[in-house]
Amino acid sequence: MERPLIELENVSVTLRNLEIPMVTGVSFAVRPREIFGIVGESGSGKTLLTRTIFALHEDTYLSAGKVTFDGEVLPLNGYMKAMKRRLGHAIGYIPQDPFASLNPTMRVGEQITEALYLAKGYPQKSERAREAAIGLLAEVGIAEPALAFRQFPDQFSGGMRQRIVIAIALSQDPRLLIADEPTTALDAFTQRRVMELLLERSRNRDLAVLLISHNLELLRQSVDRMAVLYGGQLLNVTPTADIGTRAVHPYAQALFDCMPTRDKALSDIRSIPGEPVGAGFGRRGCAFASRCAHAAETCRTQDLPINQGHGDRFSACLLGMGA
Ligand SMILES: Nc1ncnc2c1ncn2[C@@H]1O[C@H](COP(=O)(O)OP(=O)(O)OP(=O)(O)O)[C@@H](O)[C@H]1O
Image (cartoon, rainbow, N blue to C red; front, side, top):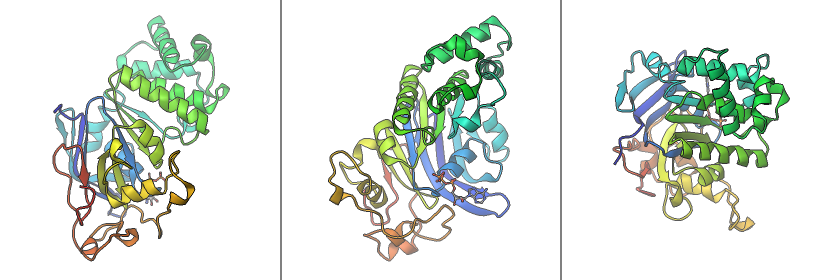
């Protein structure tokens, strides 16, 4: 099996000021060219985990575990510095909101040539940088790339802006692209077009993608495997093809049961009882136990198993379900 591009082993994320562990015991590996998802309800800790791993969060730190990128272990001490060296080169980031992530006062071309200068050293005003930027705009489906080069972000729709953000991320020739809810700010149709573009570009460029979303259906259509987070715990790692077809962790099953799909009758859609438990669960046992139809005493008293090795599947269910 190929060496993972990035591997998390028993990673915990802690809030800096309060010293509260928010995400605990997360292990998974993303392989080269793999489209890997992280799914979980709002507040489950997806963003905290991702932004901490990629050194984008000032309020949290990696308090335990091991992160290996491309075969190199990044030290916990000095982690942010070590990871920041890879951001913008080996790793590209596409944030949630294309409206907030582009500078409204700078022309689109300037923003791309700035990224090209930082990643590849192309002088910003050079013809080489201009040509590369226009090429990138064409690559992400901007109809008149030479014109777009001279325009400002507010002259574009949300979907077009997100394409420009993707062009900036691609300008750095990354091997791993992180996309945190990249389409939530867009309408359903545009969402689909932008996702298609993202996946097509990654296949074309042999990129691995880490796609974070609360939308199980979006992930089911897009990713090869996914990690399921709940209450800051990793409950399941599963090939996407398993969802709805073979046993997965009871929480992943419950998420699937409440998701409307084309082949499901309205009466088959079931909501999950109880209130969601947010990141920072901080007790022994499974954070999902209070809402799980199968929960037993052991689910409240035992520590969750940790995902070991690089297998395709992992279930943290203390009753052995979905393993
Ligand atoms: N700086 C912070 N200080 C205190 N709590 C925080 C901080 N940042 C996030 N949290 C809390 O941590 C929890 C997890 O947040 P996170 O943003 O990771 O959730 P999420 O799973 O990405 O949800 P969403 O899909 O809504 O973005 C939330 O309850 C949030 O309120």
